Length: 284
Image 1 (spheres, rainbow, N blue to C red):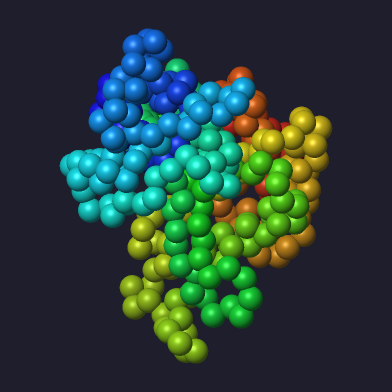
Image 2: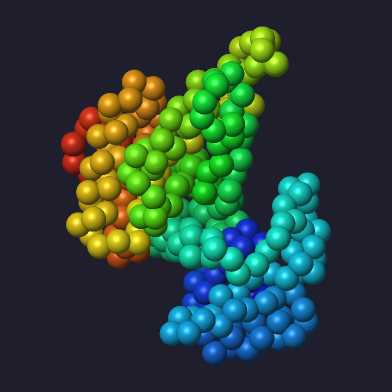
């Protein structure tokens, strides 16, 4: 159980006590789990931040991160980073952890195959398409690896973007432009375009199929979040590149609180193309 907790924090970076407990399988009894966390804290591999009127936030110390990075399941990943629960992005990190937990718990109920280690935060890919403007890299909030077991077995992948209503709908939609560029771009070297001799696009070197794109919205009232979903869908349809992308790559948006109450696989996802009605993220 302690090894599970350390591994989960290595992947997810920060979590509240109950979030971390529920990520483990089976979830331990809360009082005993708190005792174990305090013991790991005394050993110098965990740190916690107490917040007024909020649960404590746990993260790995530098020593803890180096320790876990040497475990076989993380060999070769070079993922030793600054693990801290402090900083301006703490609220965003915890929202991403909430999102991961919604998928993990829903998968357990369904009998699908996914663990907390199948969630990779801040997955980065360069976008070298020669464009003068726009982002030079695609940095997804997370990549989800998910194996569905019924009604048919399928290995699903999804880029996940978590939005806390801290930026405009237009800025949110601009992220889809970056995904569209990554999906279509031709590698360039200097000012000359260089085609891959294999004929593959850059993303095909990493993924057999381009992952779905899922936007998870939170941080505001339901009415405001529904307006953001509508704005996102409208802006995606208006841009030629993103409209084409949404037709080719399954993409959708949902409200985090509905994922938590109804299940991540429930029909709570709005497609980003021109289809009407909501559906499961597996059916986008």
